[in-house]
Image (cartoon, rainbow, N blue to C red; front, side, top):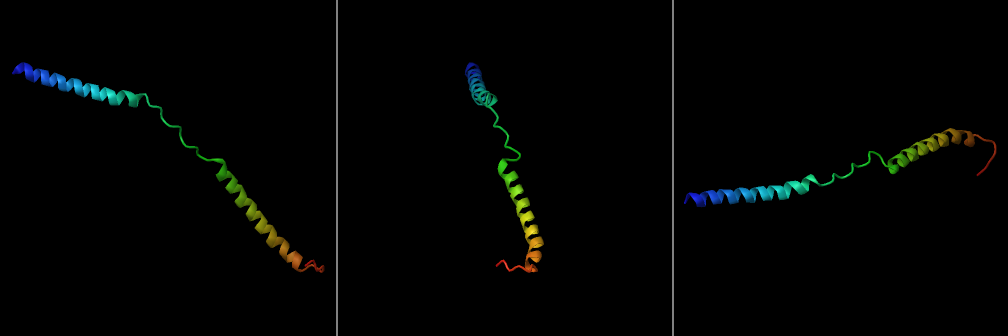
Length: 75
């Protein structure tokens, strides 16, 4: 009876060790994914576009009063 109990625990421990090694070793060799880029080109392009639109808006409001008071009838 004692031999059966020792054999049971030995078999159980072997199974646990094999399962742990089967799970842990492949995970240890896994390559971590590359980190995501902090900024890509599209966000920089969008920032430049907003600045250019703001400049165009300011120039429009600066030039419009001059054009409206011009003695020349362009349109």
